Length: 339
Image (tube, rainbow, N blue to C red; front, side):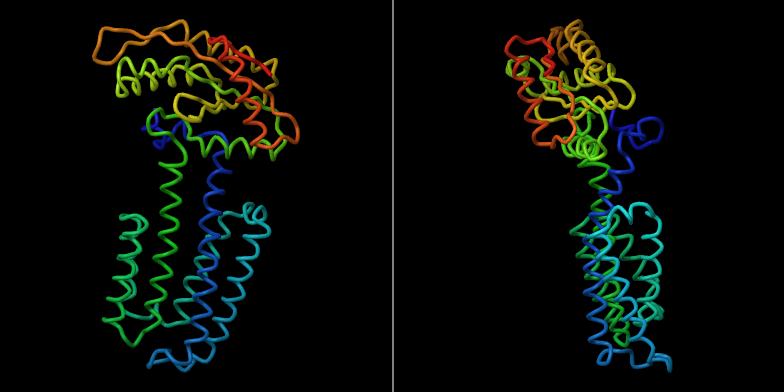
């Protein structure tokens, strides 16, 4: 299920996609923004001492340009911290400003005028994006040292490359989190707990009507003990796929932990969500699943706790309510409890 997720088509349109990606982008922006401020301050302080020997006659305007970039970086930092929703309305604006910032910084410090700058720029960018966070940062340092050895008359080339490598490493980490760690559970293909909780919080912030179900496979531990964990994982995968097939387009299924699944029924009241939950329960109970590499079959049932999100409720309170509701179902097993 998950291996086709990023190849386009319907599954790329997951619930809250734009909000989630802006959430990750904002994390990277907030980490990179203080680095810009620190780098420009260092340039302002060191410029009189370390400016290139072959400075052009117009180098006197460099401190003015650096000070302007410093004001931009401070303003960017304040907006990201105090008005993130304002920045979210213009996601491409931040990319354009970053481009102007990078070009201006290179021009002001003389780093971009070095003939080796394109070579080391491509080297840092390709290494960071290929190797990941920490190996990418190590390679950035090595490229910066090599650049200084090759071009000692352009000392500002080194911090420019370091700032570039660190920023790209932050972005690479966020992209990796988006596509692998924080979005899809690698075993079942369901959404991860982190993304499911993020989606819940966004729906609560927007004041939307929705219901939440917590699903638990009855006596699944005994199945694992009987057939082994490898076969148990395969059985869990099949049950999750079966539950996913019974959901509506736009409903979100996340792996909450172990064999517990969290379902978000967006835009429905309890009266509308209850028949869907009952259908899921019947789908699981009505069909057995074959144990991998065996002629044996396994039949399981699910217990489901179902609640409607009340206005003003917080995510921890909502989770406590649905967990208590699931506990009621598990007293009898193979039931849906609406609380």
